[in-house]
Length: 263
Image 1 (cartoon, rainbow, N blue to C red):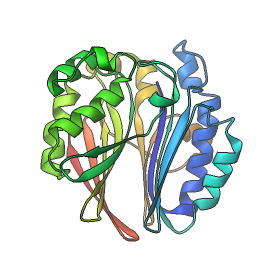
Image 2 (image 1 turned 135 degrees about the vertical axis):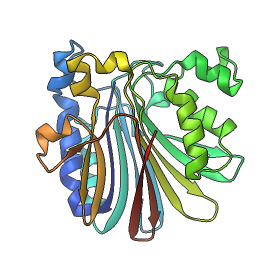
Image 3 (image 1 turned 180 degrees about the vertical axis):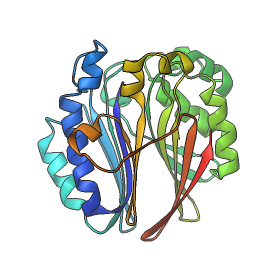
């Protein structure tokens, strides 16, 4: 499984979090304690929203080896920005550029979204819920199938609609349903929706819990949700995100507002 980062606010406040996810991807003690190796080296990607532009990048190189791209991204973290980063340790789907996250989808209902996920979902069950062809999706990840489900079933990224469909997919969680989705509606506004969910069986193992929990960092000019390992490389005043929590972050110009709900 993977390491993730979502942050919105002052770019200079986000730089240490970017540096931390690079280090956490190269040396993750929580992952190593679980007997899964210490690295997240199956590709990485990011989405950067800044000054009315969106940059979407994906690479099969590990984030800790893709030094030029990381340096360029770090240089963009000035002023008000929104950033989502995913560093992959593959669990479902072939190891290929296709399965590197974040994914991007465009819905026939008039919105685009970028999606990342850490955890394992019941891929076959989601294919049934979306009325998809399992053979066509043999080599794709569970996260990609989840995004395809949203294209099929989600009519509008309002909070009420998001809760209906994310709660449906939540029921397919095998381990973690830690997600970040950035929606861009045809009217021009952006909404980020973040979920933190562990299955009961996964939570029951202290090593899994330590690895899978999400942390919240909230300041006057920053809202960030990150994987647990980042705190080892950037100590800060984090709060642990309770299980079955979701955040709806509305981003308008150079400001954001956050609503917290039970998933």
